[in-house]
Length: 168
Image (cartoon, rainbow, N blue to C red; front, side, top):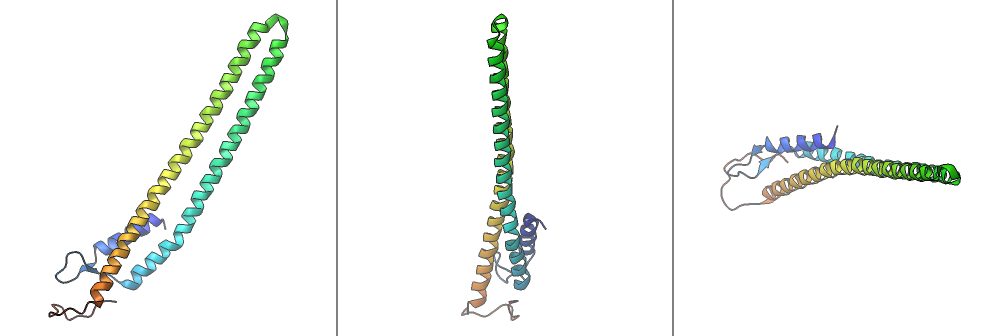
């Protein structure tokens, strides 16, 4: 299951949890179920990190391939340019053609670099959003868990409204 789906499930679990008597901010959740869900989420996050690393490695390979291709195209353009210039009858034509090939190669190399950078940037931005939402959800869950723990350990001097034991 997608980590974001797990986070959504935890949020729904906490949102739908029964409220503590005389409290809007505190609720009762099944500790074992919540801990189990959080442990499963924690187990899935390393795979998401590995996927991000794989994306970075893929980006590097694509960039390297683009550079090699650009260098090959530029080298071919320069070779073609030199060959055409060496022929006296078509010197002017050769200079123009070589410059065009070189400019096309550089433009194509730049276009490839920009496409790769845009793709990787989008993938990393999506992953950053996933991690940000996951971390925020985990933090909220931990805060609520700590709040519930504090409520459960508070002796309180007054009478209890509900004599039922806490669910954890």
